[in-house]
Length: 190
Image 1: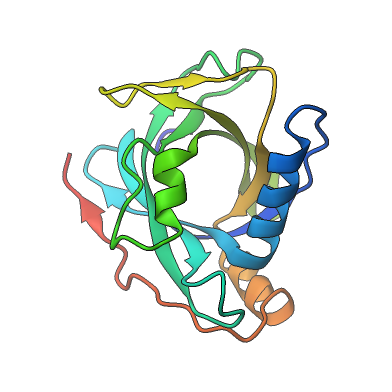
Image 2: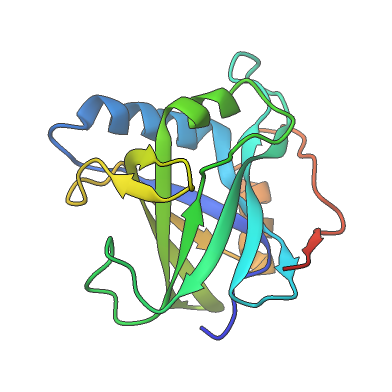
């Protein structure tokens, strides 16, 4: 990759089979399956640093509430990272040290339950697909993340920025809920 991804991405979680984090993994699987539809990445003058939001249901209590951009993250394109020592290409990290946007009630979970994502691009049928892994841990006062256990993942997911993936998601994997989009996608000056 020579630059970070930009735009709307369809997202699909996939189950995580773990021992010690089983309860958290089951909760996150349920949360993402019903309440998460991917991410949106902002364009930036710096091709290696930007921001984005998750596409999350506005209310967990109201089953057909709209999906909105929330759970803010800062994203960086790196050549390597200690949480992905075996990566054969560069990768994208998502830092959630400051996840609040509006804030939404769900975002307060992000303030208490610290997570960190590392993604790599793999070749897909219509272009790159990003495979992401999520760890639990703690952010320090400078926004640096330390994983509770680098060998234990909390979640895994796929992201596809292809327009066909977004269309398929809406046609076959949607429950009729509205979605509030950021149109146009914001541009960040770094």
